[in-house]
Image (tube, rainbow, N blue to C red; front, side, top):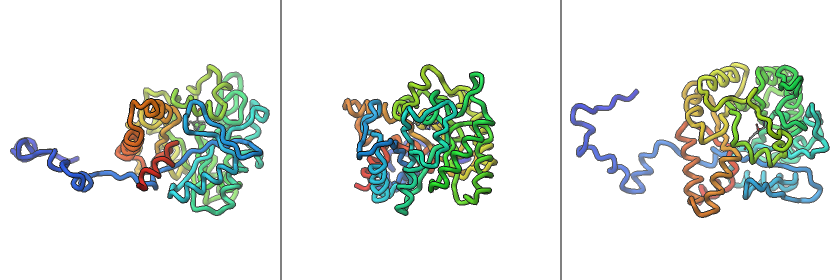
Length: 339
Ligand code: PBG
């Protein structure tokens, strides 16, 4: 820890004037401690089943739409052109394919696998990240399966592991378990290796909180109404806890995670910072749907300056220790950074 020379006259006003370094643009740039580049961005995209090239706006996320596979391909190419290193795909599964076990998740021709193939076949210089969780596929909206009113762990992990294998086989580069079941990272890693999918990376949602900020995402994929008044508190974390997040991260790292994530983003910067400092792992933050919607609501009303607010939020993630940020603003930020 740095020791401040506070008692010997050095480092005190008026000898020391903190504003001296801030007076010009060049000097501010020279003393800046962190940097935000396009390489820090991961763009989450919703994909939907459509015969035609249709984008369906997500009402609670102005500016974000669910895309057909053709439009998703286009977005992936745009991302490559802008230099965004990775996209994260989230499927909007039609209600008729949903059931209590989320069996559509194990269909190798399901929407998410079609989307992965459509992009990976183009051999673009971009990472394809896919969630492992059952909530897009279950009629109850939970991430695992339910027995006697409880989201069971081990049985869910079996299914989630199969989901991961199917996605990896379709060409997904990074498997991202977002389900918060115990032991799933280890099981997925072992099974990927047995299936000779040793190159497939794992980005675990290590510390994922039971958060109200996921509301608009659940609208987007249609799991919110299925979840009804339910919550995910028996598997996602309590917003009051910090040490527990470190234990979660430690377990996922020991089980073989290549990268870890903290979610939500801005209200959880303390967690991000502690996890990054403790484990020195590639660590990501998810600026989730509710954060996007809050910022967009304020900027579209003219209450906050759009550009400055979005960029500041990114800088805060970097300062807290994020190696990258999942954000629905990714294309906008990439554009701003290229100016
Ligand atoms: C699915 C999942 C969720 C999000 C990402 N993956 C929602 C949830 O856990 O209910 C939220 C992302 C966002 O709000 O932007 N397990």
